[in-house]
Length: 185
View 1 (cartoon, rainbow, N blue to C red):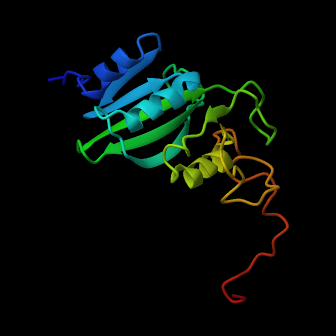
View 2 (spheres, rainbow, N blue to C red; view 1 turned 180 degrees about the vertical axis):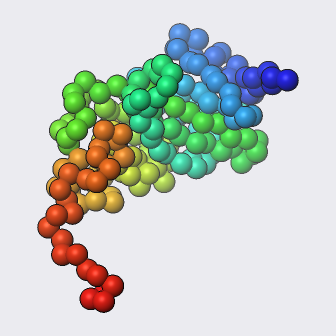
C-alpha cells in the first residue's frame, strides 16, 4: 500500500502565507519534508525560518551539495545546495534545497557567474566551514561569505573533485608523487 505524502509539515503553510508571491515547492520522502526555494529567494526564506517564532529553526545541522548530472529523472538544475535545519523548541527538522545550473563547462576551475548562492553565515555562523567545503568540492560560491576559500584542497587545485564530470583517477595530480611500497614505508 502506497503511503500518502506527508506534506502537512507545520512550517509549509506558514511559509506560503509569509511569501505568497514566491515560488516554493515541497516534497516528502520517507517522512522527511524538503522545501525547494529559488536561489534569489533563499536568504529571505532562510531568515524567516530562523527568526519567526512559528518556525524557530535555530540549528543548521548541515550544508552540502548534490550534482544531479546523469540523474535518471528531470531536475530543476544540475547542482543543488542542501541545508538541513533543526528546530529544538519544536523538535522538528526540514531540508531546504536550492538549485543552480552552470552556464560554463564544469571541467575546470573558472568562476561561473550562475553558480552563486547567498551565504547563510549571518544567520548561522557555523555555516562558514560547511559553505567553504561546498565551494571547494563543487565550485558553488556564496555571496557575502566572510572567508570563501578552499578548505580541503590547496588554493591552486585545478578543479572541484565532487563534480560528476571530474575523472575518477584525477587529472594528473598524482603523477608527481613517488610511489611508496610497503617495504619502503
